[in-house]
Picture (cartoon, rainbow, N blue to C red):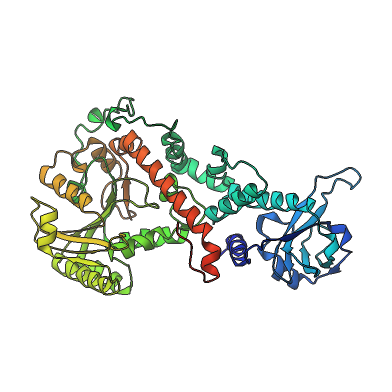
Amino acid sequence: MTPRLATCLGLVLAAALAPAAPAQERFFDVPLDQLGPGERMDVEHAEAVLWGTGPLGRGRVQLDGPGEAWLLEEPATDAGGGAPALSLAVRAPAGDTPVAGRVYLPPGAGPGYRLLPFTLAPDRASEAARERFFRAEADHYERLLREGHAGAAWFRHRADAARRELGDEVERAEADVRPPRRHDLEDSYELFSGGRAIAENLRLDRVWSGGDAGERTIEVDSIAGIEVRPYDWGPRVEGLEPELDPLATWIPADQHAVFFPSFAGLVAVLDESARLGTPLLRVADPRAEDARTRERYERQLCLELDAAARLLGPAVVRSAALTGSDPYLRTGSDVALLFECAQPELLLGWIAERQRAAAAGAEDSESLDAAALAAALPGAELDAAHGVRTPDRRLGSYALRAGDVVLVGNSLPQLARLLETRADGAASLARADEFRFFRDRYPRGAEDEAAFLLLTDAALRRWCGPRWRIGAARRTRAAALLSEHQAAAATEVVEGATPRAL
């Protein structure tokens, strides 16, 4: 865990553990130069208490009792030599007892590290300090929100609560929800990798703003999508006969697809994504925190890549592919893994054991046999099938075998579409000129190939079409509402109280 991430998590935890505000409170606003010169701390002690200050860099406040405190940075003045002045804003329970604590200041806020113990007499409290306290609290959390730290839902909730205390109207501009500006190194990488081009041109990282509220209802299919003429690949593929991935015949041409020439390639790519993060996911949904997307899908599909899987896979799987309906993997997407197998029955049996183990640990799970899946997939010719699911889709693993191919997905409609594509063939990726062109440019089986990713023009047009953009916006808004309710109940949950009904 990086210090910056730990900083934000520490701030969230500290705020969540703060006791509920009493009916009456006291507020203090004291310039730091009135606390005295303080004492110099040794470097090791200073780093131990200041490493969590993160990007703020102004230090931190620790109270000896209940309450909250912020350091306020005043505008620089000529009289002060151009250096900003700091003030201490404190909220504490009502009473006639002093408020004590410590201020830790790093270099840059004065000469060397400083520790400033303080004791505020009860008569220093004032009602005028109340506005400055909540203004500082709102500014603090809005700064964290703009800078893209982990915990956006909690920061937004606290900032809005502080603004409401001030009587301000809470209305967020687009700039408050726009992904934060990243550092130059990441921007340069995306410039040369194509990630920035995808994000800027498709605007997948921008939520559709909706429009005027009202009762208007129109057919989604009546909304015009992309009208730019698609590129004609026909002349570019004349005479090309590249080796195509066998699993391409199962995948619709308007879905994303990642082909792995071997099981070892699949494991290598997943391990590298875990080590470096997952840039592909951030193209559509850039977020600061790690949503553990890969782990969530592994649990849902009952396909965790543990030691047994890594040992079994190379002996059973000849090649693999990953596909799905849309790029919104973080918030939930229909995905499927396809395996071309030397021993498909062995792989299917291993997945069945994983599903049974997962079902045993979930009381609300439902197991599906071959007959139940055949009824849900009418017309499909299956050699074997089984699955497990829960109402909240925590588990949603359906495994099918058709010949030497094993399909594992979290969505029956997605699996039905793959089966239909394989039966028809006309709309498969294997028939797309675009696929043939790029498979000729990047030959299958090259020694340095770990994976081959293709986003076709048809997939991009569908992602950018009205149906999918409106659906993504609705999911984003639903997730935001759930996050706000979770943040509102966080303190009650931490204190062991029963959260109020939402």
